[in-house]
Image (tube, rainbow, N blue to C red):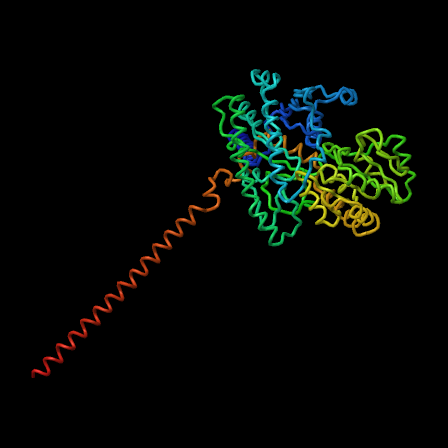
Length: 554
């Protein structure tokens, strides 16, 4: 009896241990996705460009990260205003303000009298980009607050920085030794595609510097194929060489080559969307966040603007050339043509104009030095947008579904305008061709040709329909890169290859050498064979002659 009871106890104990052990083993073998990193990050944002429109794209992401409890330090020329702080205090959002009252920022600085768009505008654009890069690097990196930051014992988990016209600010990545993300307020630059080994086949992907309409014809492909490598070489040997000198002075002589740091980007967040700029192959860490700056809600308009728009029963033309162009510098001949057309159309016009008064009063036109652009566009009586092709205003018009008249003048505006024209949502006018006739025709088509509105509405639906909002996507990628789990896996191995390996130059050369050697050997063998055959034939002939002589003697 005792033995039986002991056996039962022993059996129960063994069974219990087996069950527990099996459960433990299954738990151990089960895949676990556990975020072992801290939930609150220290993030450094580095934005050394003085263009407000660029920073306007990135600011919503920075504020949202702060709302999520992360500690944000932002180097820029655009600190949060007292009014913004009063509306939404964000104590974990810290500004390092680079603003110099003597210099200011890039607002209303483009003098249209000096603007002469031509086929060779690329050279002018490169010169402008280089001069802005020189100023940003020399002034921003030598600011006393930057010196103080570099001498401090601050530590960060991830860095966000703009990808544009200079790499000098990548020195912060080396200094703090943390992963980083590039943010682009526009289509990807050619040299960035090169750094990341992202596809930029010139046969069908138009470069940002040319206003090429898709699909590309032969001349477009020829132009594209020549300009893309030219831009990459110019950036490598003109831009980067100058940036390296300044960066070495600030961050130390042990700073690696800026290109090497640029190649280590964990992700690139781009302010574009394939519905507008076209579908193209992208690396998994090149993420489209087009419309990041577009707010989630529409704010009520001021009483005077609301009344003006509410009473415009025949529709309103919204006219704005963005934050950098100084409209009052429009050449007189073109300004007279614009005023004549706007004064004569049977519709109202709301116009961003930098001074208190127009050259002459027009009853159907309201001007303001500043306008809440997105809120105005969403008014139901706004029927057409007249702009310059800047990506912020154009993206907002696409989001709302407005047909457009676009007059590109510099930078990526040609590229953006061509993209909207390709989708059938915009009429484009060359600045050189801007006159009374061309503008009148464009305005008439924008209001009366229903195809533009229908195409704009279709484009709007495609632009909005995404698995997640641009802001949520950008936040997720920032936190993901900071966690570091997938950073090594998303980078293209092509980014680490020298150019001759990437383009298979070494393989092609070996194949040419081997093929040449084989052809040479083949012809030598043929020649040798022919020689042998000739010798054999000659020997046979000699033997036949000898036999013939012997027969005669006999």
